[in-house]
Amino acid sequence: MKTAFFSAKPYDKASFITANQTYHHDLTFLETRLTSKTTALAAGFPAVCVFINDELDAKTLHQLAENGTTTIALRCAGFNNVDLEVAKELGLKVVRVPAYSPYAVAEHAAGLVMMLNRKLYKAYNRVREDNFALNGLLGFDLHNKTVGIVGTGKIGECFARIMNGFGCKLLAYDIRENQALTEIGTQYVDLSDLLGNADVISLHCPLLPDTHHMINANSIAQLKPGAMLINTSRGGLIDTKAAINGLKSGQIGYLGIDVYEDEGSLFFQDLSDTIIQDDKFQLLQSFPNVVITAHQAFFTREALNNIANTTLMNISDIESSRDCKNQLQ
Ligand code: NAD
Image (cartoon, rainbow, N blue to C red; front, side, top):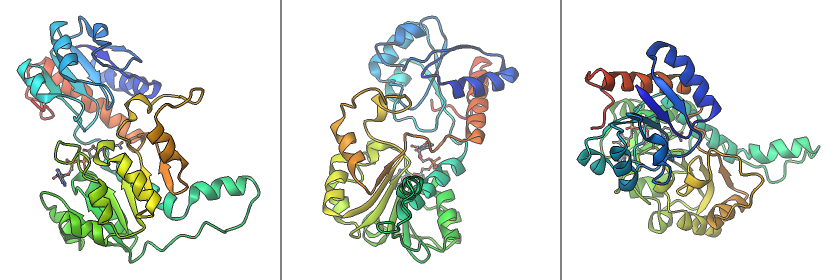
């Protein structure tokens, strides 16, 4: 199918060109982000392929439909950037990649835990400057610490298994229990019990209207003082202003994030020659106990390969009017 591929990076191009040797779609790679201002680029393309920070709000969707687009192929799992109700009204088919490598994201979350705990980001720079002092690098044993996992689907389960390997006690909160976690000794509790008892909390639930800002001033007040908070899920789960206040008061002892609620205009590009205008982000960066990565948790060879193959297979299913198991609607 003729597909306009938005927000294309060199690594996307490489993985999709390789996978497309099997599927033979007509792909046009565009570096531009899809927003209501850039929909003209999709004119004449029955399919658009989009990523996390493309904006498929009502205005964009109406313009796409008017321009002849019928299929939206998300090359990611989350779909919080698509107004599904409007897409449905317009008869647009939306497909996604529900799972490509839960290991990639869970392993990155574990990396953030270790980075913050053992202050590896400071240690790396110190040793490079021939500073071999250990002052300020003191960490803690993860063994026997309590880890709280919010959202125990595919990624949360992988993360639980990794933390289980470290000898941690596991608490979990989800709207439905995952048997695999109870089998490794995880205790399901209320969110407030999890917040009050965990030394490390990792978020692995989707961003939905009812999870937006689930970590806010109220929930931060319930934390064990000095707890570590990790978010590799979606930025909107955390109220950044409240997190900044929690860091200032010491209620949050460590913050590791791969996602940020206003990341759309920042991440996936080199802005090193510009002045970042986002004051909240700049303030976050200034804390010595905050580590930020720019939405790279998914970024492994295996994940890119799976994303490309599943996305192209989804488009083939739609093109051939076959049932597509990854169709949202
Ligand atoms: P999943 O669907 O397998 O699991 C999500 C879990 O969250 C489910 O068990 C679900 O019941 C639970 N959940 C839903 N609503 C909840 C609520 N209100 N409170 C608590 N739990 C709730 O999804 P997954 O593959 O494990 O992915 C989890 C999230 O990770 C995705 O939604 C996506 O936002 C994020 N993600 C991030 C990256 C990255 O690169 N940083 C990559 C992939 C996915």
